[in-house]
Image 1 (tube, rainbow, N blue to C red):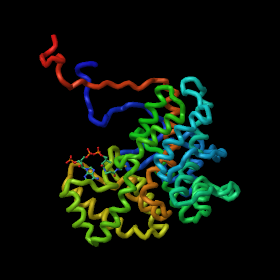
Image 2: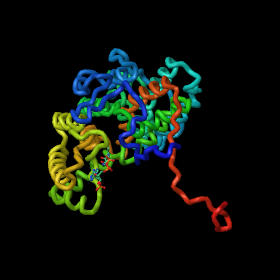
Image 3: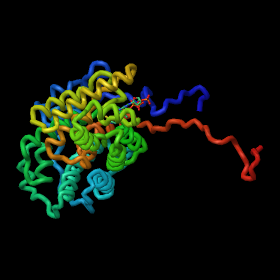
Image 4: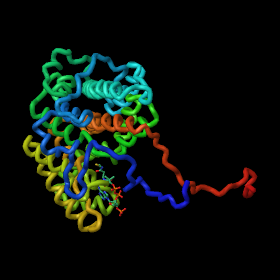
Length: 366
Ligand code: COA
């Protein structure tokens, strides 16, 4: 390794790839997919077509319906079911290695996997609800969009408010540049592994609370704050104890996270019972974070109002990471294809800072 090579913990600020997929506008507080602002997409196109925009750069293209497939062993823990089943699909479908298949074949594999991953999450959620049967195909087929079909496959019914909540959430979180899970997907894809291996690695990365798991913590937090009736006091106590407030702060955005703005509006429109306490806590948290960290803008991130919108659709906190994975299959798929085209294996360096050479006998080695 070059002696002058710089070490940046967390790779913050390091440009690891060039991408044509999404542009988070750091200062302007907007997010564009293939150049199109997500505010123009929400309510105009369903998630299935946004998948087409991200993967094929074409809003007339869409994610297909899932093929008939029976998951091997669903436990009802959706994130781990999803990770395991996605990896299993690689062998079940005999998917080819990315360095041996064409771009067209990789795109086909990713489309099949994306659709199936949504079905797996819906079926796992159904198991978690205590059902042992599956919803008949003709009932699921009544749905017009991926969000509607998802709910039908899960619950056998699809409340239009729930459909809107999920569709908006999925569009807002479909892609966001090189975050941890997307990087994981690209790293695995860069080795030439198949699309199932790349996507299941991404699911694992997304399950952590600092990335996709935060909404799971937001709902209990809102309930705790509502019980105290004192958001200001709760914020001070939390920060004094050295804890983080979930749903605030972002590596990229210094201005408002645009997804948070859209999701807040959706939560209001859908009559969320949590919107009032969420807005009160947000106000208290922003004021206190600003007072304590004037040099580090810590604004509301996507996870905060995602949790409120998911709650409208009666999605319980443990399911939140898997819901995030459902939306992110679009971004991950687009990135896996982009990575395949570069054909370059990731291989960064580590700087050794461990013990100096020493002998097993306790002395220094010569
Ligand atoms: N609440 C309180 N303090 C926070 C905070 C939060 N949500 N987020 C960051 N900070 C503080 C850190 O304690 C740190 O303070 P210090 O310099 O005194 O140690 C400072 O801000 C910088 O934190 P850092 O971890 O370097 O910021 P980051 O940009 O690397 O982190 C997140 C980004 C999202 C991981 C971080 O803001 C976080 O943990 N947020 C809560 C979890 C969350 O909402 N995750 C969803 C992400 S979309």
